[in-house]
Image 1: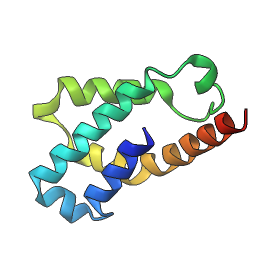
Image 2: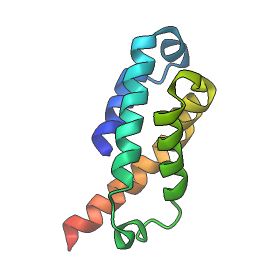
Image 3: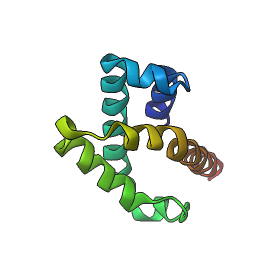
Length: 103
C-alpha cells in the first residue's frame, strides 16, 4: 500500500495541472489507487483496529467506484483523495509498519 502511495505521489508530482493534463498520469494514479484500495481489504480486522481513525470502509468503497465507474470517474474526487486523503493514510500505514516491526 505504501508503494502505491509513493507511486501516486511520484506520478502526480503534487501538481494538479499535471494530473489533469495527462490521461497517462490519470490512468497510472487510478490504477495505483485501485491496487491500494484492494490491498486495504486484505488487512485483518486486528491490524485495521490499530488505526481506528483511518476510514477503512470508505477506502473499500472508493475501490468499488474506481473499478465499476471508471468511464464516469470524477477527476475532482480522485484529486481530492490524492491531495488530502493519501497523506494521512500514508502516515497511518507507516505507523502500522513501525508497530509491526517492533513486535
